[in-house]
Structure formats: structure tokens, C-alpha cells
Image (tube, rainbow, N blue to C red; front, side, top):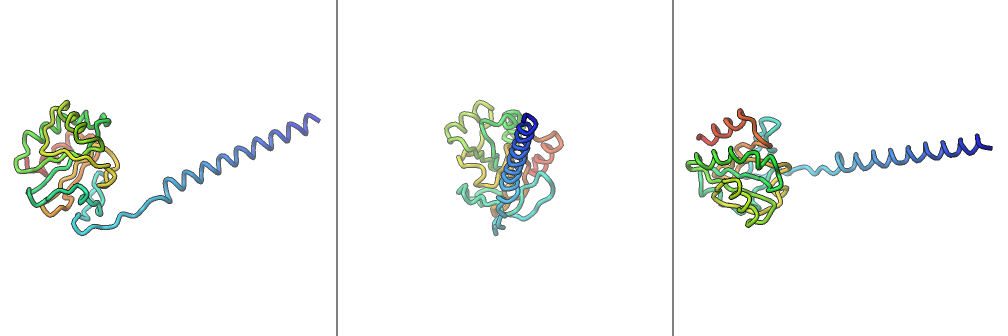
Length: 177
């Protein structure tokens, strides 16, 4: 009698494990592989992609409402006050601000403009303008992200994450600082 009961319990446990594993696999496949929407190319954004830290073409920055023609180039700092890598990068941002020449620097944060200004003030970073926008609206998937935008509104280059000294030098070189 106990053998039959033990067999039934073992069979029920095995079936439960199989059902849970199958549901987990379905959710994993659905969320990470099937819900990827292709990014449509945009006419005013460059299609240039040079490496793993480059943003793909098709990113639409028109939602920022910036007149790109006002400056030769604009550096967009996509950051968040909750991002410790953004905070850790403050010294580099200060260097950018001190040497910016004719590059306009715009900070874009998901927080309110007031919160963004307060955060940047705490970091000692004084940018030309602070904008509030959900970062995914401009194709940013992680912070910090730096995007160099030319006068025609095209992404000329981008850098993602806390930058190594070599990448910081690359940014300064691209900005001609």
C-alpha cells in the first residue's frame, strides 16, 4: 500500500516539476526572444555602428525637441540620478564641461527637470540644458550613455556605460577637445 502511494506522490512531484520548467521556458522565450521589435531606420539618424558600445541606427531623438542646427555638435548625456555609474562618471563629465568649446551639452534624465538639475548640481556638473524624458524613448537601454549628435541631427558616435580611461580619451578626441 505504501509503495503505491509513494509511487503516486513521486509521479505527481515529477509532473509538477515538468510543468513548472515548461512554463518557465515559455516565459523566458517570450520575454527575451519574441518581444523584440525591430528598430525602423530614421532619415535623420546615422546608420553607422562600429562596435559593441555603439548605438544602432534608427534611434529617433526628435522627441527631445532640440534644434540640432544651433550648434556644430551636441553631446547628449543620458543619465539617471539612481545610476551609480553616472555618479562615478561625474569627474569625467566635469572635464567635458570645462573643455567643451563649441559643443552644446544636454543632460536627459527620466527624473523631473528639477530633480535632474539638483542631481547634476550635487555632482558639480553644469550642462547647457536639462531635459526629462523616459530614456527608452530615445533608444537608451542603459545609463550612462553619451551620444554625439551632429548639426543635422545624426548620431555621429555613442558610448555606453562607465568609460575606461581609453574610452574617455576617445570621447575627448571625437569632441576635438
